[in-house]
Amino acid sequence: MEHYEAETTDDERLFAMFIYLISLFAPVIGPLLIWILKRDSSAFVDYHGKEYFNFLISFTIYSIISSILIIVLVGIILLIIVGVLGFIFTLIALFKAYNGQRYRIPMVFRLIK
Image (tube, rainbow, N blue to C red; front, side):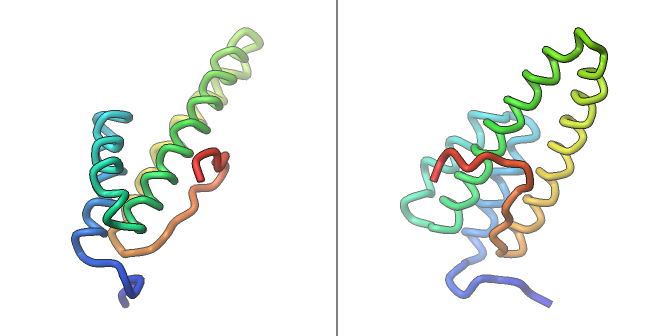
């Protein structure tokens, strides 16, 4: 069962997937390069680039808040939860992008439109 969007090519799906895959190793530079190079030629890659950077901004904010809350000890648990959820949501988005689907990552502030 394929879930491709009508206008999504194999190359677009691969580049959108690479945004998430490369983010596991180079969280800013890799995805930024792919997004900047492909956003004008592919609405699908542009969507996933925006989604990824909204995700990165949101989870950075969550991590900072959790780090501050370490003072009251609850932050340690929150920091672990944020890290695990960040990894899981990245993997889900990677597979959804590869399948040609537009995935909206939960708990994300949509600052980049």
